[in-house]
Image (tube, rainbow, N blue to C red; front, side, top):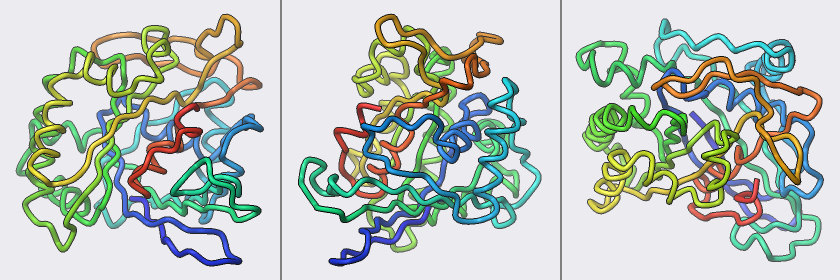
Length: 301
């Protein structure tokens, strides 16, 4: 879950508002995504992102996971499906964008006024999505679905290398969207973004700046479900690519990962060179879910 509050003032930073849930398969890299976002290592000085700061103890835990596990070349443990949605850890972070970037027009000059994205994110276990396929009557699954009904935005993370699971993801997504639309609870329009993760892999890296194209090419059935949902007027859809670990080098970039396995679920990898760890594409989908607009500079990485 992510919550933001939008209020424009002349002296205080702008704040943007949304309630968001992050879903995806076990291998999609949800926890790694959030830990990398919290750590925000080796920040690019030209990035619109000025800082990412944990707001609560759970947010600080994400940084500890990044430092104690990811930076040591270790994998994060998968999130367990052993708690109700209300009992799950709620990671809160404040993302501050530099003052020269307007939330409405990223090219506009705004003096020193900053833009804050105050987000709170629950880490749903991968089994949540798997159970949509095989355990539709599970009470705990229903609890998660009801929690998702509060969201104005959904971030659907998919390992970009798991194209052979397109049909399974499409079926699970269809059931999820039906559950979302069953009860609107006053929410007229939702935003859903499909985020392809682990795009440091060469076949994804070359098309990272064409997220809609690569999503359609690799996951046509998933994209069809999202497009039908949008055409019915239920909400808006957009597409993004990212990598929690990033690349090494500029002239001949290579993935900053040691590959552990590759199968139909996607790839499993750990950081190769922690000292040069620089993720890309982590903030762009959050910005769109909060504002409904693309940010050209964030889309660059």
